[in-house]
Length: 107
Image (cartoon, rainbow, N blue to C red; front, side):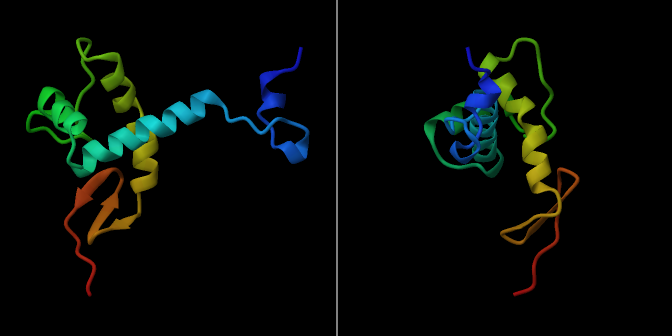
């Protein structure tokens, strides 16, 4: 029997090069959270925004016990999303500590 940590190592380090499923799952959840945050057009994004956000901010939305398991996992992935947003400039909007501030990059 081989430990999962050994299998997930790089091939050059003696493993099989597989990815850890919990890390991959978190990345996919963060990708869905990114789509909701930026308002990408699509059926899934529209349904989630109308069902769970109403007029609330995605970053400030509270986790409720009646939310679906998928929505709960996406909300939990905001931690990863906030880490990526802190100090990052995107399309003229500065992100700081997970909140949007209205700073425009001069062109």
